[in-house]
Length: 311
Image 1 (cartoon, helix red, strand yellow):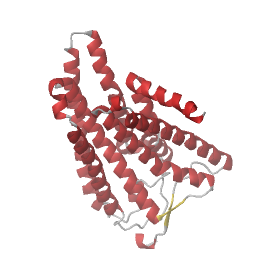
Image 2 (image 1 turned 60 degrees about the vertical axis):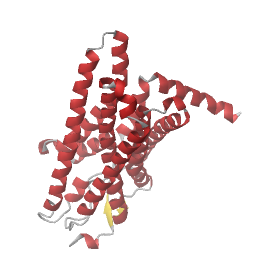
Image 3 (image 1 turned 180 degrees about the vertical axis):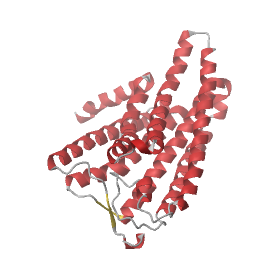
Image 4 (image 1 turned 90 degrees about the vertical axis):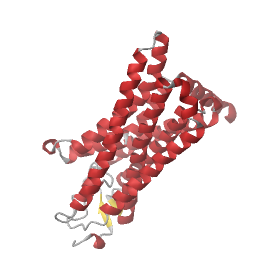
């Protein structure tokens, strides 16, 4: 296979060869996928329907849930279909689309989590100016900037990745089209074209990470100065779910892409890909609703309305 122009399809990594294990993989991914759709769907519905949740924090949470639904829908359904039909193939255009949407949604989610850190910083460290700084217009602009930045980031990476000649076959050692695995198929030294883009992206993402860390240092400093225990508890309750989601997102991504080559193997890469691409969209709704009484109350009302409407 001399170059990428002769490629019509890629072969994704299969979870198992035995039919029983393929069906088990399909069932497990189906359960996780439905849980992610249900959890994020409930949050989207709750925020959209309850006027009490029409605040900046919940507006950003709604956007986060939309991104989570998109992220898991980009990779999991194709993997389930391949296991169900006992195939590994994905078309060249399908692979390019998967790369674009995955990078778009993951990048937008990271930028949105950075914006949410700023929202928590203003709410706790600048409470008197919160309504002025985080008005509806500013929130829409921040969310739009996160989505647009993710789109441009994905467009740049996808165009760059698929313009590189591929000479090492068409087998992708991952259950979805992942840029590092595609670059392994590139011709000698041609991956250096993507290296510059990767370095720029790492610098940008590291800048966002530093912003989040600095924001939380100031947040916790301000929280510890609150005289009442109830006030400190309320402030921590607002921040801990976001901090947990950021920690899960950053830790799995960093280990997946920055782990030492000595521990890298197809099995480890597969597990890490599942941890950073499949688990967070399913777990994030649980994290955000666990300590949030307002959200819990709204979700209970929505669940109680379902049997009433069916009657």
